[in-house]
Image (tube, rainbow, N blue to C red; front, side, top):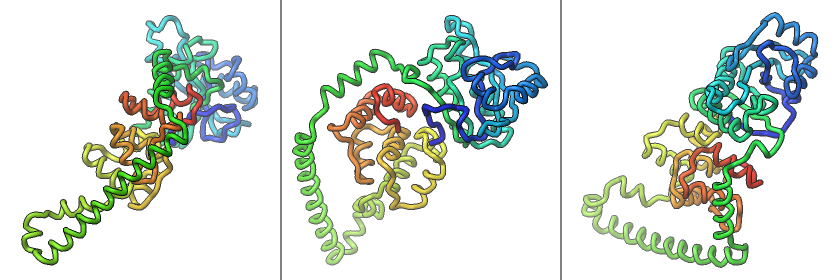
Length: 340
């Protein structure tokens, strides 16, 4: 996925660049900044920073990575949180955008960010996370780069109490155990088998009509009608839906937060079977309804289960029109489920 939120030590990541939440004087500080200087080699990194001299809030500069696994360090200065009414959001968003643009200018392909300004600068972690995912997401809509957002604790994934309570109540109200679900599944299977039998009968009648009255038959049936009788694969259904919504491929795979190469595989192979998470992410990217989502998932052999907390959270998000993949992932993470 182009944006991946991970819990890790940013100084240990082997990427083209890691981002340092710096001070304006570009001097070694504490926290993540101090760890980056220590990992790179304090003396050499400070000499290069001194040669640059200064960085404005919201801007970014680049140095070598020295002893770090990362090839480069991008230094950006985040805003100090005051009350939210002093341009903090715009300045923090600029930190991410300008760092990404600098990485692009240097032809870098991967970058790792800390949660800028969320430490001693006091930016509330939940707000800092939303700014980060929004700014990075906006950039990735028109660019290709592997971006990691490195967080250290679950405090960064604080969703609103109202949303948390709504989702947990939805799970409590709709969760069914495996035994009960199997009973529902058998009923669904019976309905689907009956529908399949009816399709066979219709197909047999169609064949008889073609054989005995071909001219009359083709006069009242178009080629499109015949195509509708065929079962769609996941790939065929997906790209039909994309066309119907007038969307472009880059918009879809960026909104789904999936890799361009993976998307190309799905497009080039009509029988490609994606993972369930990939199928769900694409359904969210297309803003499909719950029924449309399940119909798409069925073409890949999946269904949203009411005996799975993960699936119920996805169901809640879709039914409540939460189609921002990062907001969906924040909700999953906050409720201790794996993200998409």
